[in-house]
Each structure stands twice: as structure tokens, then as C-alpha cells.
Length: 543
Image (cartoon, rainbow, N blue to C red):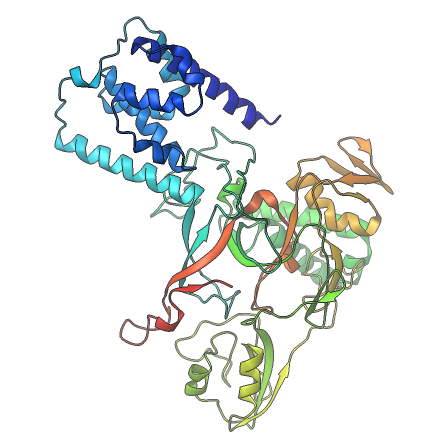
């Protein structure tokens, strides 16, 4: 039994015992609290609230807020009208209710006999604000939350400036790991650069309520950035601590040898370089750590679910040996050749091309946001296009060719960062198996580099490699059984997306919710009267 479930049971028992004594003080039989459904009827009777409150008691998650209101009404029956006392009862009902029930000094008064308490204007405002904060917090924690798309990794499915709602109940809302936090912000306090918005005095283990569905292949999912457990204040989630260490190590290896051959093939040398890189990063940057629920929120498409085998061949994804269709609005990098003349901005606007293009002098064209990965060469543009737009561009005057770009060389920047063991890149990747809860794998020299982070970091085991032997929690291990489900996420803008190809698996405890509905779409590169509101992109379902 997890500590979370154990504490929940203890708190529930304590609250029930307190209410037993409160029922008795109110002239009811204490054991009524043990009768399902009838107990709430008696409770509403004691605080003299209408039976229609019962509707909210039986609605999941809303009932939490309703029960807290009922606790406040109990406070009033014991003449506890102060903001401090009521706040304590809401925050710690498992302690406050027993106090009211067992204390001889505290006596119950029926609501009809209570004097009318006139609240000051300050108190009225305080009550309203607290009510709104608690209600909104419950809604965004357990039901639905609003998000904004900050990058082009999901174009054209989702655009920079899209505002959307993400459902927490589809996959089941999870209990916050750090419940003591400033409301309505994520990990940093407003108007500060790096001040934490949360306290880690209480750090709850992972627990998820049952959801309406399981994650399916091709769902668009919001999740906590799995590489974001360790970062630097300087780069935040733009470059994780691990990515920064690898970059420093490769730079060191290149400066020393002029190439990466020794770095990729000599394990001892690589380990030494990595250790030096870690020390350099620790000395020159401010390294920080974040709990799961405070890691950056990412949004991608779930390509593979637990137990799937995934392989990418020339951009085509194969799941369990079957070729999968591209998402309808997915983009890839194309080389658009011209006869030497610039393509007019009207063409880019007509075909809604917004990512990756460069003009002849290598500078971004006006009013556009560009990826730093793509460069203009040889009278050609390198741009992200959907397949349909790529076909249409072939007939545009001045364009002499539109060719898909495919990476073929091994890429040391893709997960698991070892071209000596796997010769993968973003367009030709795998085969890789997605871990499934309860599944057991044999540990080999090749797959250890793939699954080590799952075993060591995400599932909290001590992992060591000594010679040709693997030790987990101090014991020799030849197999491992996974404790969680994992997922493989990729952006629809396949050549401009930092996704599982770069940082690996997404554990189930990082899943936040399902992207459902875009309610507003604003073009960040246009003024209010220049087409800033993308009317055609509003009020659409995310598919």
C-alpha cells in the first residue's frame, strides 16, 4: 500500500470520528456517519442546508469543494466565524473536526438559533476571493486547464498562439506532488525570473484517479517534460542539464581530438569526458531540480503506447511492423529550389508557410519566427511544409523543385546518444520497444543505454554497471520488470520538434491530460488590425 493511500485512509478515519461526535452534539446518532448517502442527508440537516446540495456531493471532484463548504458550515454551528479558524478547518479537517467533536468547550448551536454575523467589506471580499481561488484550483487540477502553444513543434495541427483546453479527466487527474504552491502559476512566481512558486515541505507520491479512457495511439497529449527534472537557471527547459552536459562533453572531445571518433568508441574516454563536463556545468551554471508536476508542460502526439515496437524508416513510422499514416496536418522539412529570385511573401502567406524559411542573405523574412536549425543555401529555401502544400508549390512561378529532406547519417544528439551502439537519426530510428507496466525484459549491453533512465531515474532504483555485470539496488540483475507504463511522443512538425527522439520515453506519472479544444488563436507576428485573430482556426477540436 502506498504512503498516499495510507495517509488518505488515516485522514478519512480521523474525519469520520470527528463527525461522529459532532453528530451526537447535534442530537443525532453518531453512527449515522457510517451509513452511505444517509450520512450526508443528516449532515445537511445539521447545518440546515437544502437537499439540492446533494447533487454536488455526488459529482466527482466538485464534491471535494462541496464537502469543504459543509465543513465551514459546521464551523459556524460552533460559532467559529473567524477567517483563521475556518481556514484551518478547510486545510486540516481531519484534525479540526475531531477537535470540535471531542472538546468540551465547543458546543453545537442549531443554525436557527445563531445570531446573524455581519461581515465587514474586507471579510466579504476575502471570502469571495478564497472561494474563487479554491474553486478554480479544483477545476484546473482535476477537470480542465487552459494552455497556450509557445512553439511550432505541432504545426499545422496546433499553431503558435493557439489557446486550448486540456482535459484532466480523460486519462484521470493526478494528485499534485507539491500541493503547497502559489495558485494559477506553474513553477515560477509572477514578476520573478527564477523564484519557485511551490514549497516541497510536502511531496506526495504519484497517484492518479481513474480516467474515462486510456491513452491511444495518435492522441494529442500534454505531459511534464521528462528531461526537465534537472535544469540550469540560465537555460531552463530550453536545454536540460543533461543536454548541456553532452554538448560541453562533445565540444571538449572535438577540441582535444578534432573529431568524435574516440568519444563515440572509447567508453573509458567518454566517461572521463562526461565527468569533466558535469563538473564544468556545475561550476559555471546554477543547476536546479524540479518535482514531476512542476516540470515544463509539453504537448505532442502520442505515437506509441506501452508494449508497442516503433521503427522509423525514411520518415515513415512503423508500429508493430505496420506502416502508419502521417497526421493530416503534419509537416516535414523540404528543400524548395528557385531560379534565383526571391519567393514573394504573398506566396508564403497564401500557403501559410511560417516555419524555417530563410531569404537569400540568410536573414529571416519580415514578421516571422524561424527555427535555428535550417539554413538557406544554393538559391533554395529549407522550409517546413505539409505534403499538400509541397505539391502546390511545385506549380508556383520561380520555383524549380520541391524535394523532401531526409537525414541518413547517424546522429549523436538523438536518444540514446551513442552512435557506436545504435546508428539512428530523426528520420531513421529504431527499432525500439516501449516499456509496459509488469513486462520483464532481459538486460543486454545494447538495451541498457535505452532503458537505464527508466530504471534508475523514473522508477527510483540504484543502477550500476561493473565490468560486464549490471547491479540494481546492489544485487546482480539480468532482467528487469517495469513498474510504470511509458509512451513515445512526437511533434507533427517532424523536423522541428524536440520530442522522444531526443529525450526518450514519457513515464505515466508525467502525463497531464488530453488536448481537446482550441478556443482562441492569435498570430504573434501580426497586429490587432492586421489579422492577429485567426478566425478560421478558432473553436476547433484537436485531432
